[in-house]
Image (cartoon, rainbow, N blue to C red; front, side, top):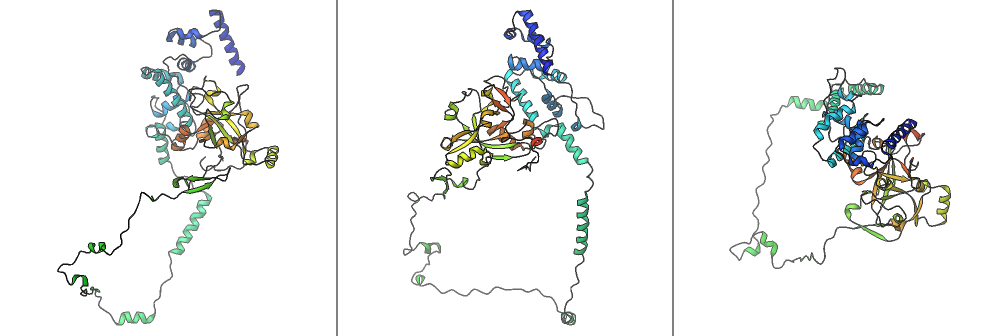
Length: 469
């Protein structure tokens, strides 16, 4: 496949050089949009979707590319009409969708009035939506925010309600038999026999049942108090509480405020005590790493631009919303030689960690394209520090913000089975990482095993916290 693509690219460059004398394509920006579209469509190997991507993302033209994710979402939501399906085929069982070019030609007259930024945002938001919620197989309909307007969800819900119950398993049948036997025993209680004397008394001496009426005793007259003998009027009861002989309590709330109880937690790196507010005293500290079947969640440090570790790295892009991150290594993940070194020196002074590079900074501001290929909150794992971790002083990590990074083989695999709140928290406050990155060659690398292991490569290793997948 690579040889085929390389041959097409070489043929295109030869054609451009023969027609224009150079392989520079910047002149396409100056021609009318329709002429640029016709020229790109004439290139062998470029379809309508690829041409629309070039026009929208590179040439800043008004265009709306339709890929597999966008076409699938439009059909499932019912925004693109399709031919009536056979009676035996339901919409949620549909595997083949209309051709992308047909969908693009249908929706473009309805979207051509939008501005370029709106078209761009709609494009990458729908692609991300198709990767996270509306996947091709096993879509996460329960967490989908559009399920009430989705025909795919309505078809699946109606089919589930009309489906016959599955045949009971062997365990359920045995449980039903045991429950039936237990129910028969419980429905036959032993007869209760009363003493004979009681029976004869009841039969021989019948009595008339009359209600028992209890009358309260009349209140006795209270003796008159000495304080009221000499006066014609008796003071009210509430006035008795404020007599002259009673003591008065003066509360000084300003000098002695009633402050809420404070909790102290000993720091692991020093003997100093930290004062925590009461609402945070019972919150457990998250683990450094939580392993699931399809994802591994790391609790990392967010490095600001003025941090000493960042000063040695490539400056972050101005429009990059992500920061450099540091993922710490646990003691059992460190190599044997480093463990021996740690035994010879104080363990509390230094920790080992792997750098995580923001996607836009790693690509130097080119081709991140938000959610079209890379996610907005995506980071790359540095391959060098992934194999040979950095020794970082704990003092450099004080007062740094902590974030969660979701590692996995792909974006659909990471978000499979998550709730809507978990997906929202990841995109708004967290990061995702699906690949490593070599800073020298600027080429992608697979993730290190300590960051995430694919389910196919676990080879019998235990899986923890796997209740949601």
